Image (cartoon, rainbow over all chains, first blue to last red; front, side, top):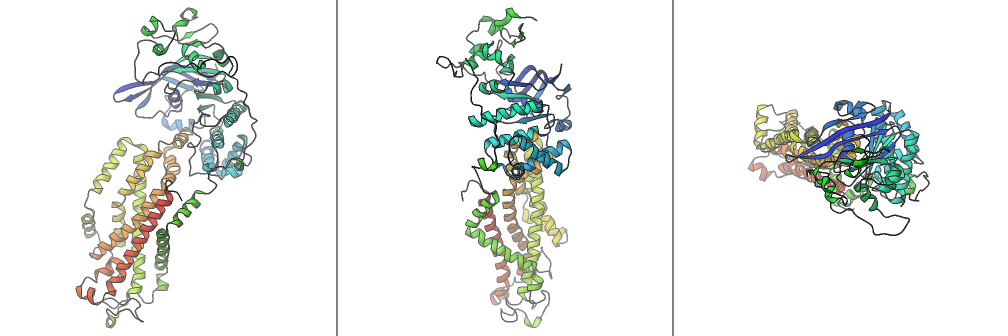
Length: 326
Length: 305
């Protein structure tokens, strides 16, 4: 198995006022080399906590990875001492964020920020780092990289800053790039450019991408596989085409029906009724049952396990109890 | 249903010119313009340049040796020989003021440099790491602030020989609390910012994040507090010297020049003798405060230029 990232039974809990909030509640997934996997779900379903857990940056002391393992090329990051994580972050795993306007330091030049990272990880001198930085800026599409290196972030537009962030994240050739809503804050035309850029780079450097988003349009554009999360758990894992063709879990179905279709007859847009359960609520059965239109008695009594179908798709729903192979 | 959206745009290179819609101007230019708009601050800055220049070039500017005593000329009024008069030992007031500026400014700058350094490091650590470390450090700050500082200063000065060095050390060691609180506050809000998280995901160490990423963002308030602090220290030094606990004669400082004027006959008869050192203290402290206020406005993005 040549998975770059293997997450198994990951549990990240938060303690707040003596209450335990299960932000990430036992998730398992893998990302292969050069593969782009999307992690989708509503706000508060544990997407960002999953990414912070991988980076080893869960806000301490309230939050903690309490169980499970995160293996990057076979090495467990959960057990990794903090000192060693400094060499992992940015070199093996890098991350880009939602808000390009605020994720660059306003008082340092683009060059300072880029070369700092390169010098730290590749252990090269300032001159080599500057050359590498200019090269990266060229790759992400700046026509005059040497000039941009001397610029401060406020001179750049949102799309350009996101390009700089991508250049910075990719500068040490990481195995895995985590993109946390990379295009949410950008306008539509720039979004397309940034997605295209990420796709190109992923191919060029054979970097795996974990794309965290709630925008299914972005998912269809970039991802090969999709992981659907709900309330800290994975409810469905599927290839992107299958998912849009035939969503298995009622929640996935709801998500897909809540975006307008461009072709076909115009129908009323559907929404999923109700809200994500408040963090910390413990339900005896399926966490989605209170909002599910297909729920039946068993759903509120038992917690559904992950069913693996014959075609390899995984879904956490009793509707598929009959089709199990395991 | 389909989700493929036909909005692919060729990924052509973009350059700074295409997109520089926001903020053409360098930040410092904007700040300089805001500062220049504040007339008092400009006056303060000009005064400071003159005063600092006079202190630096004191040996060239002073007409006489500041410790040369001509007892026949004691308490001479301002005139041809003594532009600002002479003191009770017949020393030239102008020369003593010029040399005194060196001492007063040296004490001011050096103590503030020390207290800013201590305050910044402690405030940065408390604000960045938070938790128990923050609580302990801030309680130490509270304890130091609740000391009656004037009496503490007097006690310390009587224990240690009052020299320029001890004065600077004492001011630095007891003057950092305000800066520490200020820097802590800045760090508390900045450590949550996205660029700090981004830096952490890139494997940058805490030390580097504190000193090369967050500190430059907090520099504005620190510079303002330093500027205002210099004025405060000059006043405090003058106060101590006036009580005879500061800079010891014959070394002139503005404070100890006032000390020897503590005599009703001198005060009333030879008004020029206490007036000039007092005036210099006033002007210098005012100038520092004006500049500090101007800098505060210049650094504050909420105040439009």
